[in-house]
Length: 178
Image 1: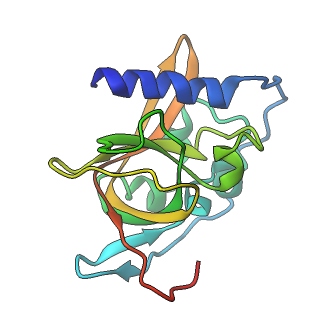
Image 2 (image 1 turned 135 degrees about the vertical axis):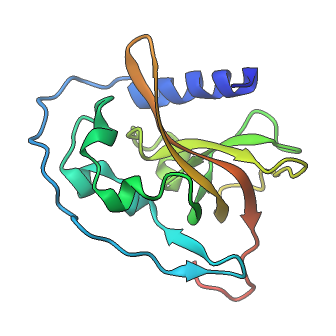
Image 3 (image 1 turned 180 degrees about the vertical axis):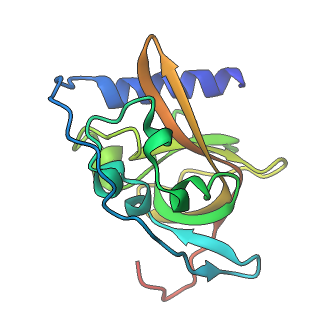
C-alpha cells in the first residue's frame, strides 16, 4: 500500500474511532439473505448503494468486528472483485486537484463531522491508473470501480472493511435526479 494510503487509513481510523464508546454487541443475524443488483452503463456494472454495505442493516452487526466477512451473506461476498457503481460523497481531502486516492462517504454528515461514521460508511477509493479526481465541494458523485472486501486493523482496531480500486468518477447527466 502506498504511503498516502497508510495516511488515509490512519485518518479514517480517527474518524471511525474518535469518541466511540464501547457498546454491548448485538446478536448477529442475517436480515437480508438474498439480493440482486441492476446493471448500469455501457460496461454493465452493478449498481450498489451504501445501504447494501451497511452491516447493521444486513447482519444486525454492531459493533462491526474483524470477522465480519465470515458472517456476510453470499450476495455481499460475491461483490468482491466485481465492478460496481455507487453514489456517495468525496470526503474533503487535504489536496483538491489531481487526486489518485480519496475517502468516499455515505453522506454529507460524515464529511462535515456531523456524525460518527461506521467502518462501512466511509472507505478508500484508488483511481484508475492515469486518471485523477478533483474535489469540487460536497456534492453527490458516482464512483465506478472494482469493489473489494478487505479487513485492515491498526493497533487492533478495525479501520477498513471495503475499498474500491481502478475507479473513475461517473459524470452525472444534466437534469438527473440526485
